[in-house]
Image (cartoon, rainbow, N blue to C red; front, side, top):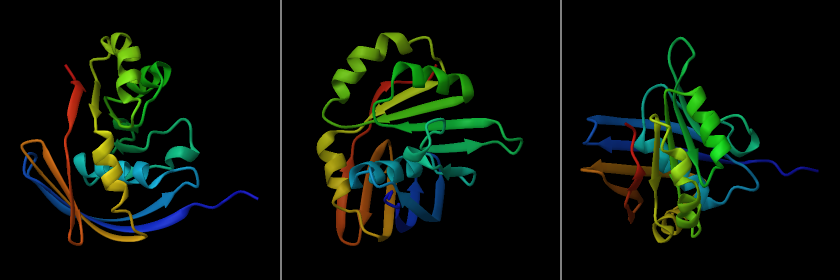
Length: 180
């Protein structure tokens, strides 16, 4: 019998001074049985970094042809496709063909090796942005995970501070590829 997703209730408050976006999102996050706390927290961080009224968490790991997060226009077109981890060049190519903008948030100890392997094949994608998070910082994020969280994310000058209760994690975004 297949394991069921674990449900997390998240109150995500975003204060993004760079984009002048200040909003609280009440999210129900289904954590897939194979998803780690680290990945789920990176997913929430990616949501905060791109927070918008139309932004949605998708089914994520349980669906191959969907990103982890997306934003659709009112007419149903994909404005933003957000992928996590280390997607293949094929997935990146397909994503760039489907959405106006694609952001990959990479993390983990093999992220450098992955990027060295695929970076030359991504130069043609003008709508692709690749951002890396350090392994130590994403592990610290994982320690904040709780089934019921009030998560505060503050963004200023590209610096990110994530807090739950009295615990704070600072996250550095390293841009490996910017959109043209």
